[in-house]
View 1 (cartoon, rainbow, N blue to C red):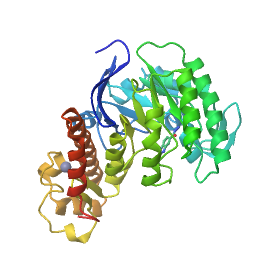
View 2 (cartoon, rainbow, N blue to C red):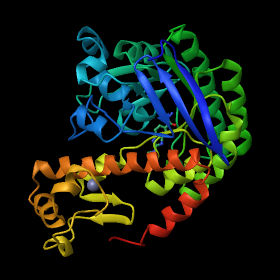
View 3 (tube, protein in one colour):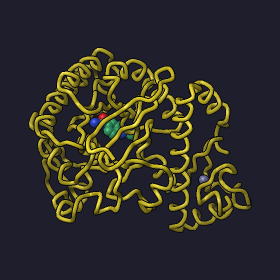
Length: 373
Ligand SMILES: CNc1nc2cc(C(=O)NN)ccc2[nH]1
Ligand SMILES: [Zn+2]
């Protein structure tokens, strides 16, 4: 365990990097996938099980936790790690993105955002300073700057104005965060899909100086081709000796393409959320377990998978408990999906370390059937 926050690159293969983020609560093997624990839980999973899938770090959502049970209550109860029984690193987002996508009656000013809770309609105010205070009360190890993520489609002028506001908020976040050894503050690059705006944002973030840099404002409907197009240049705009975090991504093939372009960390609700809707990700593609063709199938989801769902249950059983809306359905499919995502990350880390990422990527795409399996 290190008493401070640091990042080291062990190997590169093209733009892909193999690394380790060291924190006082444990090391994070990169490229890393962060399961999302929105309301202080990765839905349908006990934390011990999340760890068993191979996760080194979880994501917590400031927006949800500030509304319920509130950051002050979690602080009084010993902080988010104690509260949710997860003693390894936690990254919390700043609340900016989710206020814009979930809250009602939002009002955006230079100062911050006022909004009404989607839970009970109560009024709230988020600023860079309040977001830093909330994330400190939660006790998160990696804190995200408070920023604004413009909804697409947005014209270049709107994207530019939004990015420049976010850069002013990045400075305020940095000033409010202060000096907290062992804790990290990540800046977030914005600028939509416009290269010179992405460059201006990266320049400003480097001037302020952060422990890590996120690529924000993507996976908001631009499509994979446009997202990869941005990553082709955006990663190189960020310091190479700091972790690069792509927010909100993604499907397995998004993740492989992002790692190929130099991304070190990602988070996404997809594996857990789609587990609850009956979608299982496998090396050969997606299994929609609700499909009638599975109702007599004695095989596991994936013959090569060692997760509890694949070790002990048939597709027929998983089909039955999904159709019957049994709680075990969410438990088993979530576990399988998170296990698959962590296996994918482990396979990529090994491939980068052995200088065979291109071969890994070719095999990854060759294995996948089109459509459902
Ligand atoms: C699912 N797509 C997706 N895009 C995101 C972008 C951000 C962002 O720019 N925050 N500042 C956060 C979460 C996201 N989730
Ligand atoms: Zn499995």
